[in-house]
Length: 217
Image 1 (cartoon, helix red, strand yellow):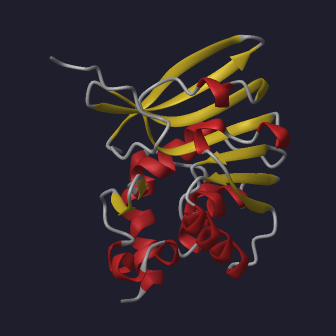
Image 2 (cartoon, rainbow, N blue to C red; image 1 turned 180 degrees about the vertical axis):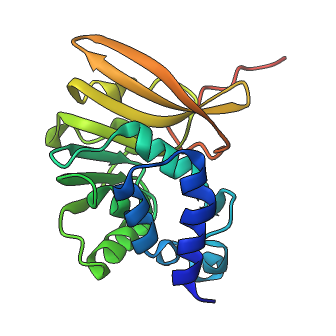
């Protein structure tokens, strides 16, 4: 399989037609080898138009959802960015090409170690993977201009929002009543707004980001 051609087709068919006009995002997704961030057996699926669950509570969301969330996040070259739930590191790699520095948090030590290996192999030196509870973030490295969660969450990520700078934003896929939407939270002092940006399809909810299930008699 020619992954380079597959990457180009992914951008041409799943990114550009979905109103992602930021050339920096297009270029990053054309360049970064998405397949290496998946276990070997999943690599032939790297550029298909569906969410790929590659480990418990970990997935690569569709290229369409990812690119639209990245565009809505409006990453800037000066941004200090927290990539919560970095997983295998694909989102970290893309973000690192768009911002000044990425702090990536991964609660699964084996997945986090693999993510760091992928970043090192690609000579990405403005991102670092830290082991820790993803839903708690990494306050000691903040506050952040941007926080990025490229999987589904079912509730307001209060601990992460507290780590935003005033005026900072948090991008995530919010899943409510079985419906997923790309959203942007913004901080204005101690007030947080949430704006829906697009309909999404992501379903995988990492530990710590789901709602508690009510007990039913």
